[in-house]
Amino acid sequence: MNTLPSLLIIGTGGTIAGAGASPELSTRYQAAQVPVQAVAAAVPGLEARASLRFAQPVQKASYEIDSADWQAIRAAVLAGLADPALAGVVITHGTDTLEETAFWLHHSVADPRPVVLTGAMRPGTAHSPDGPANVFNAAMVALSAQARNRGTLVVMNERIHGAAFVGKRHFASVQAFDSGSAGELGSVADGVAVFHGDADPRAARRAVLAPPAGQALPRVPILSGHAGLDALTLQAVIDTRPDGLVLAGTGNGNLPAALRPLIGSAIGRGVAVVRASRGLEGTITRDSPMFDDSGLGTITAGRLPPAKARVLLMLMLACGVPAQQRQALFDAA
Image 1 (cartoon, rainbow, N blue to C red):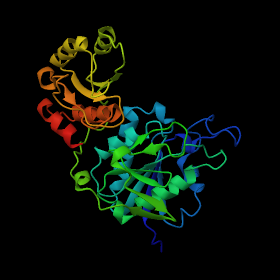
Image 2: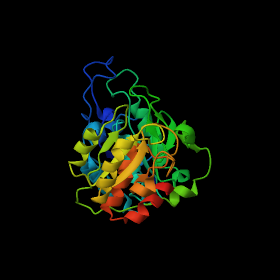
Image 3: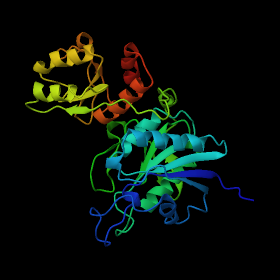
Image 4: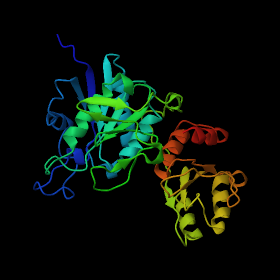
């Protein structure tokens, strides 16, 4: 009789499922070549810790992941969690957009059981691949009772991060992921997940929105601020008729004064506009002396970087959150 806990491993492709022509190639390879069962089979000791189930809704490099893939991944997670015997979920994912998928699930899956994303910075064919250790450690977190009620988690290079804060900071290092000033939640050593403290109650109280299944998500591009950003560029984006728009301004979400009439006009036509910053740390000041958010009708992203602000705005628009409630959800994110 099998008494091992049940664990679902969902494969989506990425470097962790990649293969190169020779062992010395750690940045030149083809992503998403290996099915998730084979990825798990390369992890020593994993089958001794859990009864494994598998799903493979997506198989691609994560820079190819789109909103339809987010829906498919979420559906696979919910299908697994429908079984009360399931202890947790591990998702293998490419690292380029891992933080976005993690944040998507963080705000669209309410189950208290752990959903843990992991990936690799080196393909399995490289010298010292990091994928097997990352999968094993992610599984140990997903099986830990201490990981419950923390929302979606990310495990990379023995560190446990919360989806709300984690980001990829280096394109090639195995220590690519960091949570900035918020800090990591814990670590994994010798098959044991250790958390630095109890679950933050704000994670359990986070907004969780359920987008309609089978429907395309709203289109929300990001426009990055830079010296010399002009009205023609913003107008070109607005002319594509997006459902929403994230403006990744400089500094404290700053944008040239010449752009503000266009921003107000777009909002007047029903485009939801979020003002964020291209910087990695800090919280956007609402209604600062340099930008009148209330007057224009912009939403401020708070501490969310542009990519995560985009995810949350897409969820709000998909779920029909009224305009007057959107700022409060950003403030609480």
